[in-house]
Image 1: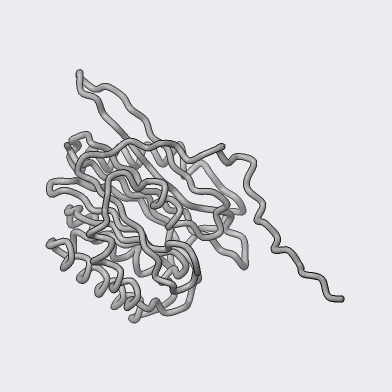
Image 2: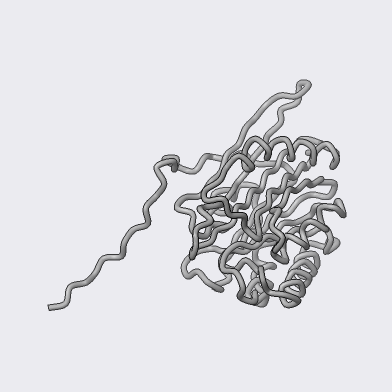
Length: 252
């Protein structure tokens, strides 16, 4: 008689916290998630962060010579200086996809901008997942209106889970401090696992604060912060096509 084989549970890292932290709101920031169904079933794989006008942004990116289309797009968006939205998809890295990948980024940025009423250059994009497969943007675009409508400042846990690929637990942290008598909040989520074939993984980090910080200073702070954190970590020496860390300051 055949016996039913139980599904093997993934091994969770011993570094995993007992629970996801209760993250405070960042005024001027809202988050939403949805399921595109492109790769994963029964889980969200899209994350949208939207920001109030006047938000500043800084970014650091992979030094790989084979950067994915979303990295190229977002580097230009950060240089442009606007920051109204960040759209992330998990399951497809949109890397090694040639002109199709560039066109996909342009379409996603324009459709997100249309939904939020902003300039497409104010939209950052990040993708993580399988390399070399064209990204079908249609299921993503279809979810944009619902995500925009459902966006909330409290959705940190869902956002951290939506950007996961081979991660075994969602990653988030926050700090509160006082600067010149003003309470400042900093929140961040990240995803990443070992860059080990065949399950090649991307490191993404998204951090936001309600402090008012001009772009040049924000960029310098991010460079200094990543030097002693993300840039001090290695698993097997590989660099992803899609790594990035973005830092937003809403000034609210």
